[in-house]
Length: 184
Image (cartoon, rainbow, N blue to C red; front, side):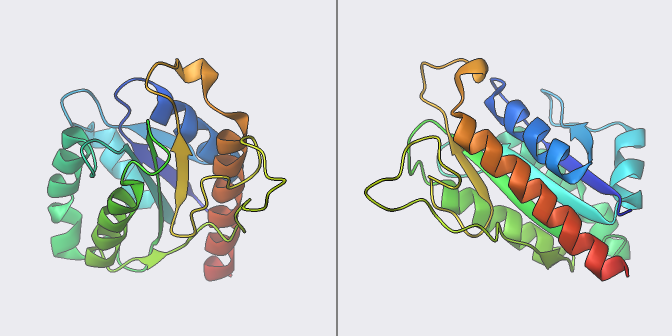
C-alpha cells in the first residue's frame, strides 16, 4: 500500500475538513501546518517517507496562506537534496467565492511540486456542468488541476457543501490509486 501524506494549512477549519476528506479517500496521514507556518521534525519525516504528498491551502488574496508559503520555503531543504524527487503530488484549495482565484493557488502548488521534481495528479473527475447539476454534485466547482471547494464566508466548517467533501474524498482515492501504480 502506498504511503500518502496530506500536508495543509487551515485558517478557519474549512480547509481542515477538506484535508480530512482527502485523507479519508487516500488512506493518508494528516500533517497540519501550525498557525505560525511550522511543522515538527516528525512531520518532515512523514513527508520524506511518503510516496505521495497532497498539499492543501485556503486561497487568500489569490494564493496560498502565508503559513503554507512558509512551509513551501522551508521545503527548500528536501529540494536541495532532491529528497522528494519522483514522489506523486497533488493539491486542493477552498475559498469563499465560487471562483475566488482558486486556480492561482493550485498553480502555485503545481509549481512547488514541479520544483521538487514531482509527478502531478489532477482530479480525473468530470465537472457537474449541466442544467440539471446541483450544488452538492461531484466536482460542481469544475476543477481538473486539483480539488476545489467553495465555502460561503459566513458558513461554519460544518456547513461545507457535501458535494465538495465527496469530491475531495474521490480526489484522495485517485491520488492513492495513481501512486500505487507508480509503486508497482
